[in-house]
Length: 451
Ligand SMILES: *Cc1c(COP(=O)(O)O)cnc(C)c1O
Image 1 (spheres, helix red, strand yellow):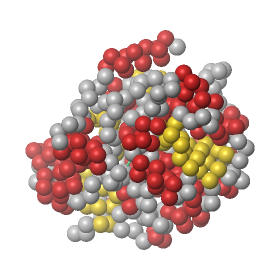
Image 2: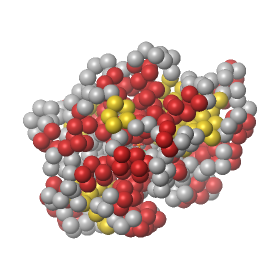
Image 3: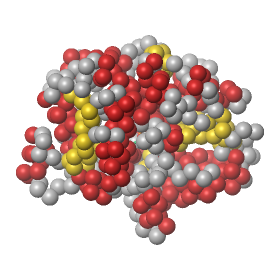
Image 4: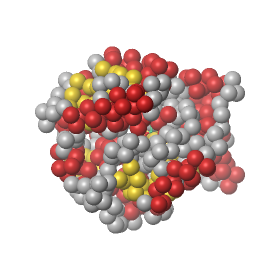
């Protein structure tokens, strides 16, 4: 009756799992918006290292994890698989609840699983500096951490509103040696243009992406780094699900349902794809895979499955995905990492084809779930992760009614120590349950339908 199922360091998986090898039909390729043709590897080489471009399109089922990356993973990996006995007891459920705890990494989430790999491949190809954008700072701090371990410089364009309101993650970035600027800056043309037009702007993720991409494109020694959505990011995150599968073997069980929260889709994909692979290959046809998103940004439950830009500024290739439209700006919920208009193309395809399904939740019910979790299991989870907690609690309560002893597994993507303001507002009853903004979404989608 162990609470934590642990792996030794030498039991850590040595290969990532590439689900592209098991998809029933190929993924629709990203398109060059200028020509409408699939993009070529050369198109990406100005801002990404060749090895990551290769991983993006690889059809090999397994991709070896470099020794240098494994060495850094060992700082916090393998992460524990917890059996949530105390939560089960609090809910009086016959269901058995397990969660993978990614909050033990130095930056406090799953994001360094890919940040470390990306920094490594860039270092190997002679790059000296990485540029990126960050909203609330989870990705920026993860990349700053990874860059520092490989001796790379790191420039982070942080949305100005967050830079001013949420100083703690900026301080993390600076502690790891990164430079962090409130975006829009006057360091890039994109930034200068916006500042001229809107001197009082508090920035947006779209603008910050434009700045980071321009910085990388204009400097030979600099590459751009993205924290979610792309195939290679999902690939690196499969270390979560691969470890979990070994841990379930030790526990002599297998999940009936797998849950995770979805912003761009990286932690959910990383945790679930090794299980989805079993399903796709017909080995575990019954396992249910469920993604959890905010009602305020209901990409998978209310979006359109079509080609759209990855960013507001329309700089990226067109990606086939569920989208709320690239100019949709979601309401300011506290799960900042889940405010993205699109989702990872692989995850969208699997959802479209019925291999996984999505559920959406309001802020207050999500924070309520986080409190039930904190007061039983002890950990204070990130507001993002709390979406998965909510889904699991609902399912466990359903199991109580039916008497089912289902095995429920979720990825607990990070801790909430820098998100306590959201917790505080919940205590004061001041959190807003944003209705999903149907009119805004409709307006945003209309432009897509015309194309
Ligand atoms: C960034 C973040 C997310 C959302 O990103 P995904 O790519 O969808 O995983 C979820 N949880 C935490 C803790 C995060 O920091």
